[in-house]
Image (cartoon, rainbow, N blue to C red; front, side):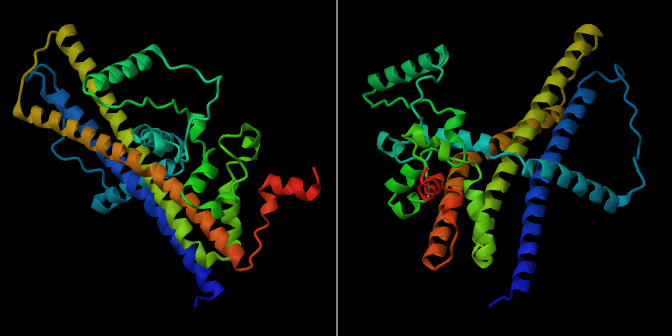
Length: 337
């Protein structure tokens, strides 16, 4: 069995490499692909004009005097800085997209068992004309081909706030009633929404880390998975935006060169390869982003379930977590309010 000192050292090293790799990998992904996209855009611009129409002086050999190790070191530092920004982004946006996608793909019965559901706010804005027209088109398609159509209620950003409004119902309908008692709010009762707080899960994590740190490694790992998926999601969005900027600059610059300066374009197999390379990079980024949106919501739900199950197990073994500090229902019962 590890001593407290060894456990602290192990925890420090675990947190270090999780944060280091969680920042470095998305940073390298975003930085390298963005440089490739912009480099290919530069090549397309330079070599698509007729020879002699525009001169771009390029040195035969470019040596910044840093050497291979110096350039690699600078690249790693920049990647870590960029990745650190991604690593600390709020998972709310990809989680909201993922939850909405999962809800819309689910059957009517399965929607009732989701942690994220519409709260039925009557003051919510109505769907736009385009959304209603698309829903009517799908309804007509299903009628023609004799298929059932169940248009989902609209999920807004507030419905997917973490921890989720329908978390209690989710746990109850999945047979986890012993964990549902830890959740002081109900998605179907707006009078209890005031009990929901964003630091609810974090408070439990802090107390578990203090009382039983050796049981919190899996919790840290689950959180790291969410952070890594979030970082990659933002990195892919960065790459897709870089592709959009590169294509816009190419189009604008070439249009000015051809129609404003009277230059002519030339076609070359190399240019086609460069353009295809940009499209493939964009497609790769879109594919990774789409796949992350398919599962990141499940990662966040798993994180909640694991924290609550660990807290429940701790109380069964005599550890006092003082639930009244983060459960206002218990506080009101103790104070008589």
